[in-house]
Image 1 (cartoon, rainbow, N blue to C red):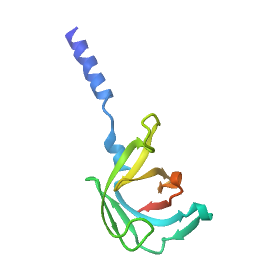
Image 2 (cartoon, rainbow, N blue to C red):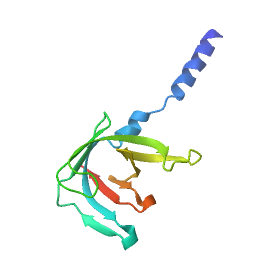
Image 3 (cartoon, rainbow, N blue to C red):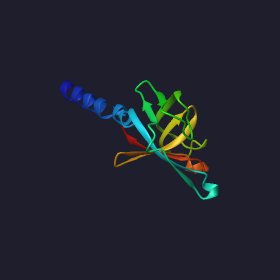
Image 4 (tube, one colour):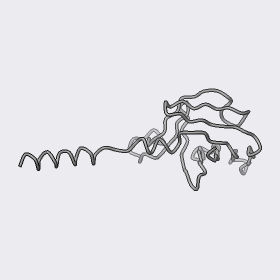
Length: 133
């Protein structure tokens, strides 16, 4: 009976562990900024950065390093970031969504076919598109 109880406790312990590292690994690495869309109140303006080498390097230690030139949001430098589920608004009754917070700016996150999209369109802010470098 003790062995069965130990087995059940072990199984429950391992099944309740989350695999946060695999989620965090989605963003870690070098991402090249390809374009931005901004100014939705003016109908949206796309800026092409594909010929420039603007790199956002998301590191495991929650430091983002931006290098390569001027862009719409972050000049060259280091920034603290958080990647995970959080409340988009201030209301804790809202569902949590997958976000990237860079120096307290909240960006919704999407990764489709190797293209990462960070968006502030929920407040008529810019949308940033990246491809993995």
